[in-house]
Amino acid sequence: MRVDAVVVGARCAGAATAMLLARAGGRVILVDKGEHGADTLSTHALMRGAILQLHRWGILPSIVAAGTPPVRSTTFSYSAEDVVVPIEPRFDIDALYAPRRVLLDRMLVDAAAASGADVRYGVRVEDVVADDRGRVRGITAVAGGSRQRIDADIVIGADGLHSTIAQRVGAARVVEGRHATGTLYSYWENLPVEGYYWRFRANGSIGAIPTNHGATCVFASIPSERFRSEIRHDPTSAYRRLIRDVSAVFEARLYGARRVEPVRGFGGHTGFIKQGFGPGWALVGDAGYFKDPLTAHGITDALRDAELLVRAIVHGTDGALAEYERTRHDLSRRLFELTDDIASFAWTDDELQSLHRGFSREMSREVKALAALEPLAWHSPSASAPHVA
Image 1 (cartoon, helix red, strand yellow):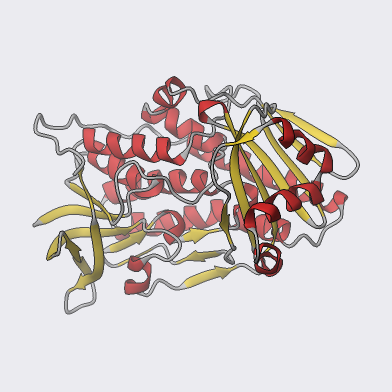
Image 2 (cartoon, one colour):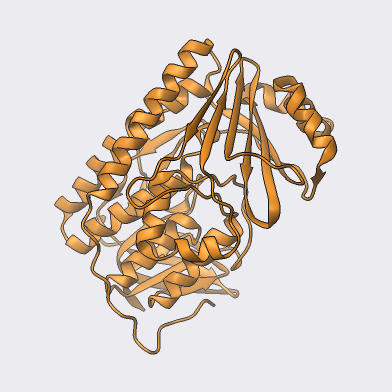
C-alpha cells in the first residue's frame, strides 16, 4: 500500500493534520493504537489561535452546538489582586472554548474521515522504513495480530510526548526546558465560574476551566519534584489539600459542588523543542514540541503546527519544510521560555505578572501570524471516502 502521507497518532495534532492534508487532495492514512472516541490525560483550555483555526476549518460550530460554554474572560489571581482580562472580539472570534478532548479529538477525526482520510484504530507502529540513503519511506505496524507495511511520501509523527516516530528517526532536541510541574485534576458539577480562572502562589497554582455538560475542570499544579511525595498515599486527598493550600476560599466552594469523575494526575516532564522534519518525515504536536501544561497552550500549539506543516507539505519542497521549521521555532521559542520560567515557581508577584504580560504579547503575535495565512484550497472527497475503522 502506498499513500501520500501516513499520520501516526489520531489525537488533535494528528487528526487536524490528516484532515487538512485530505482536504488538500492528499491520499492520507491516519493510524492510532487506541480507540475512536476515547478520552486522554489532558486539560483542554483553548486559546484564541486555536479557536480561530477551528472557526476557519468549519469545526467550531459543532463544538458550540455540543453545548461547550463560551469563555468571555480570563482571571489571573495573584497574592495582592485579581486581574480580569475580557476576551475582546478580534479576527471573527468573540469567545474562547474548552471542549473535552473526547469531543474535540473525535470531531477532528471524523472531519478527517469525511474529508477522505483513511482512519484506522488499533494499529501499533513498530518502526519506520528507510531507503539506502536514509530517507524515510513508510512504516511497519501491527494491527489485529498481523504485521503490515505502509509506504508513504512522508511519515508524520503525531504520537505524543513519547513518540515512536521521533525515537526511530532520531529527532534531536534543539531546546531543553529546566522546570516541570505535576498536576492533579478532576471535574465538578454545580461549580459556576466566570471564564478561565488561574490562581498563583509560591507553593502552587490552581485553575478552573468551564467545559461540556455543565462541568468545570479544576486542577492543582505544583513543582514536579514535590509531586510524588505529595500524592504518594492518597491522590484524592492530596488533590483537595493542594487546592486548599493555594486558596482555602476556592476549596470551600467545592463543598457545595459534586465531583463527577476520578482524580487524574500527570507527574510532569521537562519541555523540549525537537527537530521538526527530516528526509521523508515530520513531527507535529507533543511529538516535536512539548512545554509545561501550566500555561494551557498545548492544544493551541498542536493545531497551529498542524496547519503550518500541511502548508509546507502541499508546497512540496524541502525548502518549504525548512520554512515550517523556522516558523514553528519562531512562534514557539519565547512561549516556551516564558512557560518554563512560570513553571519554576521562583518568582515574585510582580515578576509573574510581567511573565504573563510577555506570554500575552507572544500569543497576540501568534494569532496575527495565523490570521495572515491565506485560506487553504479544499478538494471535495470522493463519494467512496473512507470511514473510521
